[in-house]
Length: 344
Image (cartoon, rainbow, N blue to C red):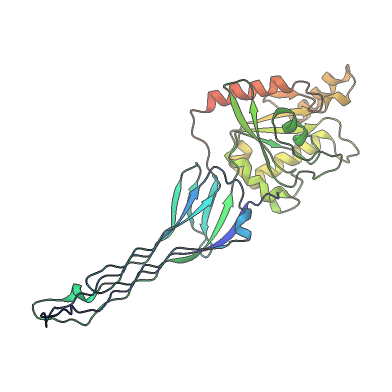
């Protein structure tokens, strides 16, 4: 199924029910007085983060969500029933914006989070409410107020511990296939990943983390080129970025160093916070190099980048060095889990 990370919906809360005008009419009681009841409140619209929903694709086919209108009041002081609320299931990680103003309304990050997005109308008052010592037979009732109607923009950010970052064909999909049950497409041409893939990496029976394979980023991604602009925002919630670099690009016009520098430049253009996020350099596809050339070739890349952070050499296809990388990630995450996650 194609991943859909943005949607525009309309939410309509229910109107309040109208108050009733009525008078008590019973045998032997000629002046029973007013008995018109109040209307019922209109239902509200809520967004609810639900664990078994993982995309916004359903909103392409069901974009209008209405709560029930409150019932009108009735005679004999009967109050109208309240309208049923409308509860709309969204995936955890959904940001909600008002379409017209651009105002951020809320952020549903965890399963069970609830956000009121359209409040139901208030009930109208029946004429029984207006009787007094000087007005024994009021013929006045009020209408219920309209419920809120608004358009919302929904934006889904993946919630993962680790994000894979790199140029197309750097080997991100191959890595996530090896370490998790996720099965992204792998082929010998760029842009095989057209939507983010989440995988759970289980290093032992009690320890695991979530890793996200993000579509390849190319030069100009921060301005809309390729697929990068649409998915760079997903990296903002991760605790760690793995910068995957192909040490021996196949039929490529740019060197590994140039490819890595372009990625760093796009990160900085997109977000200063993202550029400063913890990032590890992962030199992939070392199986393409001769045994004696691996150390020299990899060190040359590190030196050219002036890299001072952690460096790992792996072959995602043959699993060389992959296990050690996963355990190192797990240790890093356990040390940082007490710190609050960046919700940018």
